[in-house]
Structures are given as C-alpha cells and as structure tokens.
Length: 161
Length: 289
Image (cartoon, rainbow over all chains, first blue to last red; front, side):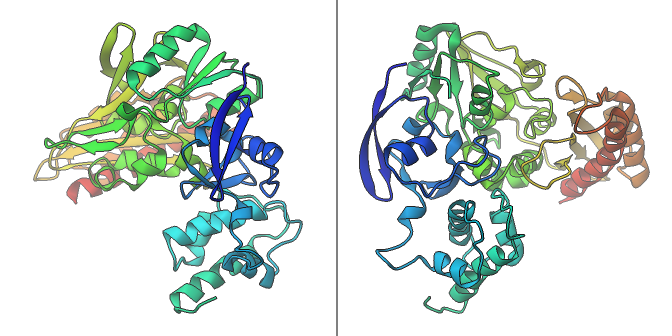
C-alpha cells in the first residue's frame, strides 16, 4: 500500500514522517524517529511495555496506527528528563532499586506519571491499579510501587524533589 | 503488520463515503484494541481501515433534558466509566466500561468497537441490553435504529450491512426507583475476559415491590442473552434474598454455556446462579438510593 505523509509531535518536537499507514506508532517512533526507549513486549496490548502518553493518557502504542497520532501530543520516556536532570519518578526508580532488567521500566514510569497526574497523593492501592496494565517479570512490583509512592508522599508533604 | 490503506475522514458523511468507495474490504477503526490484534494475528485482512477518530457525530456521552443518555460510538471506556450521569443513572454501563482491560485499553477502546466486535463476553453489552439501549446505525440508504441485541448474530458476527456503522447508543431515562448493576467473573482483576458477565436492572415501587426486571448474561451463549424466566420470577414481589436466590437458580437453567479454556459449562452455570443473585440485590440497593 502507498506510504502516507503525516506530522507527529513527539516530546514537543515535530517530525514529518512518510511511511506505510499500517505501521504502529511504536514501530515508527522506534525505527523512524530512533527513540528506542519504548519497548515491544507482546505486540498485542497486553504487557504495557510500549506505553506512551497521547494527550496525557496512557495507551499501548503497539495498537495505535501511527497516523492516528497526528494532531496529538505524544510523550515517550525520552521526554521526561529535562537535560541531564531526571524526572522525579525516574530518580525515585533509581533510588528505590526498582529497575532490574529494565525492559518494562519506560512504560511503567509513564504509567506512574499518568497515575500521579490523576491522583497526586495516590495510595498504594491506587498505584497498583494505575500500573495494572504494565507487566514486570523481574521485580515482583514492590520496589516499583515503593518508588511511585515516594513521589506521591513527597507531593503530599509539599516537598520539592 | 500486513499492509492496508488508511483514511481519517472528518465527518460522518465523509466516513460513509470512504467506506462505500473502498468496498467490502474496508472496515471502520475505533480504538483498535480488538481490530488491530485480529489484523496482526491474521484473523482479519482488511484492505483499508477508515479511522473514526475525527468524526464529530460519534463523539461523547450526552444526557438530554428528558434524562435520555446518548453514548457516541467512539466514546471510550474511560470516558463512559468516568461519566457522572452514567455512574448514577446508568450504573450497569459504567460498571461494564470500568472493568475492560487496563487504563491503556480503556483510553483507546470505544463502545462501538466493544459492541460491534460481537464477543459474547463484551463487558458493555449486557449493560446496554438491560438498560434498553437502541443502536443508531448509519448506512448508504440512510439511518435506522434497532434494539442493541439485534446487532449480534453470533460470536464475532453482526447484522450490520456492508458500509453500515453504529453511530450511537441511546438509553431511555430510567424512572424513579430504578437501579442497575453489572459484574463479571475473571481469574485476574484486569486484562482478562469474562468467564461469565451478568447485568441486571430492576424497577421498584414505593413499597419495594419489583415492577420490572431485566437480566442479561454474557459469555454463556453465542451472543449476549436475556434470562426472561428469571426476570419474571422477580416481578410482583419484594426483592428479598430469597427472591434473588430463586432468580439465580432460574437464570442458571436458562443459560446455555459451553466448556472452553476459560471455564467449564457447569462452572459457568454455577457462576450465573451466584452472580445473578448478587447482581439483582445490588441493583435493588441502588434502586432504593
């Protein structure tokens, strides 16, 4: 089928992409834009490793056709840090030892970001609910929940992290 | 993924034209959470996907002055589950929309897709049935409306004609004293498919006597089905524990489940009994406010 041209806005930068419309947002972001933080686990929307934020909402980008993202704000793990300063959630994951093999972590952190946007002072229960669409085969989730919870507590204490 | 053509029309008229132009190989694309998996796995081979993402006529959850709820076909599960009117007045629908998949799934999946994928286990389908939803359908020959259950003819099969799409579901305003509920059984809390789903709707008079009852069962027949004898068993009496238990027993007899990877027929029948009992009690609680 014929390739199509569409403009994607990823992490605030605009990209003119020319590709087959049948490719997923995940494929195009990884292979055309060379942002390889987002991972393909299952490819069928079950594991959450490909999680991106589209207009602030988590989606599994393996099940989004890339032209569908035209006119929307796409955010990937690469868009969280400001220069060399990690996002508070990224720092919390490091500090709590929440990362083992790392494959699920980009999606997990974005799910954490969306959870804390929805519920800034999220309880452990709300955090578990928020990351329920993201599978981790290494950590047993405890340290991931600890890391997200530490940021939720920091914001409820009014601390600057 | 196997290649296909793609278009993103900006109005319902353009979408209908795009579907007509590309013929039978073209399919409308909602959130893609079912359709793109089927394409990736080779179960469907569309020549073109017509995105409904920009069609304004299909958007949103609206309540009109009479209290009727119009749910656009591309309203997402998350939008419906978060809608205050749906939660309060059309509770079974909010219940169903809120248990689909994960946040990721619910942000993408649309109600039009959930219903037209025609899975007997679809979590919004039994709620739409008990709430008396009419499906509004647009096609080359104009528009028509039909009771939502007439959309399904079997697992994965709809009665839609080529080129037709569902535009919205319209749910009549429930009278005072009405309540509804949906729950499903799954081994995992999220990202799972109903072994059995039960939706119920009851109308109680001031004395607590059941005036009307509707029960719909998911994943126990080739399509979502009503349990008319169980409904009848509730009408004209108070909704006591005993009445609910009887409705459960009758509904279990009405279900026609199969044994598959998710559960045996006898387990499903057991679930219909216990879940129907619990569901009608919960609907009655909500009806009492």
